[in-house]
Image (cartoon, rainbow, N blue to C red):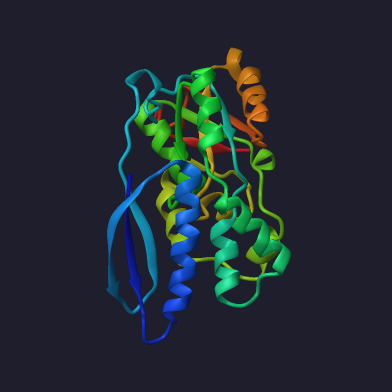
Length: 252
């Protein structure tokens, strides 16, 4: 069930527009089988919209970020770059096709990916949201006491995002993310544009899953059967940097 939370600048944005926002939210809740039971709305200088959601899960189906083990493969179920595109939209610089691709990705629920992950019994996982891909991978390696290797060329990216980064369409949250993960990531010779992409703050990102290598093919097959276009982007390793054995990410 969900509670709807809204902050709306009623003197600057019409209530008809708010109605469209609420209608869109209701459509997604219905798709997710989630009941809207109430909420709260206030007059606010900046538009804000979201939900406080409560649900139940069987203990046997629980996937946490704390059980990844060396040798596990890393699988990502959505392309990244929504923060970059959202910034371009705000500045009136987003091509309609780029905008539509990002909106479609954000609009797509993670229910199908979650079903596949549960069926295959992945070892660990998390969604990729405000801390970016590197930030959420960092949560997995710290919680699991391991390290990770990430293959940048394998990471799926929304169309038009590299060009938008080159044009300076980078949100402040993404820059702060990059600063936050710098101490735990070895970027090697990776250019800053790619570093920014890997740290981009996501809205409604995909699932990042750590699956035992023998089950890697089964997970990709299960995701495909659910209609999810997933990518293998790296692996969990035991070793870290010279100054510490775990909690590190190496980007190739």
